[in-house]
Length: 133
Image (cartoon, rainbow, N blue to C red; front, top):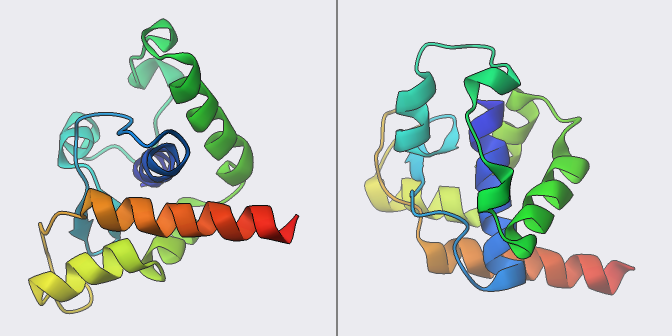
């Protein structure tokens, strides 16, 4: 679950900072927060992953992509999976997708989170963060 949420936050902040998607996969409003079904399928049933379980090629990322991911990891790596999930439950992109689907708490939903709503939320976050500094 933590990998899912870190990917979601990397995706959202990258949309805000770079005005482009970080990857092609989409997120759905599952009961425990935003989930990429494609990523979930790769690690279904696993409760712990090591770096060897997540094949990657950092050289395939451009500078902006690496920077977005690194900043998110630096800022959120100390949060647990449950803390990150709880954070997403308070945020408009997931809440709006759940509302559109009519899903009750803990009920399944495959409603997609909309990129425009994700971008708007993360742009607002980054704007607030820069004003607070």
